[in-house]
Image (cartoon, helix red, strand yellow):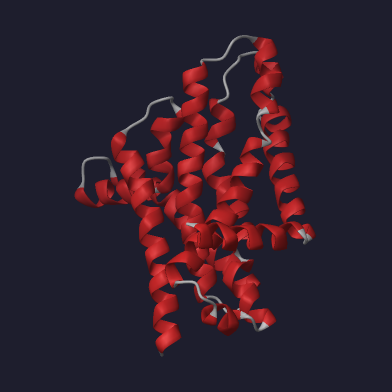
Length: 240
């Protein structure tokens, strides 16, 4: 665990030495704030309910997460440090987990900075603290799965642009695939599979303040699967 944290700290220092992380987090806060207060007219509605705010999170994560993960491995290739990194006394699993924790910490920081939103909105009335906590938990879980997917795509990409575009497209497909299922109807086997595959479908119960163990298992399994794929890919390249 010590090695994993050392890698994560290295990555975080590198991220904060670049203006990209600040710009991405600021863009995230500005977009979600404009969406809530101006596009959806939160104060005009006059209800202390942030479901409309959290409903946009799956789509927003499709752009936030790739912007944070695109440099993880693609930047190593650009700087020519990819091969050097693989020769360091760290296992592939430790390298992958360290970079994952760094990107997840940045994404979680962006989410943490949204806390003034419910605080300011509480002037309209009292919130259900349990529902609010569940909504934040759902975003964090989807974020973990999305970061793992973004890290895996970055490990395959040759540069940051292709890593970003590839991750955005992959996440958009996984978020919007349940819309296809809605056209097919809810009773068919294909529709059920597409719903199960969808990141936003599993997020829906959290947005309503409900914690479902099946959704927890889905997000955690997705994160573990793509982290494993990243580590396996590194091992294969190391010995090829």
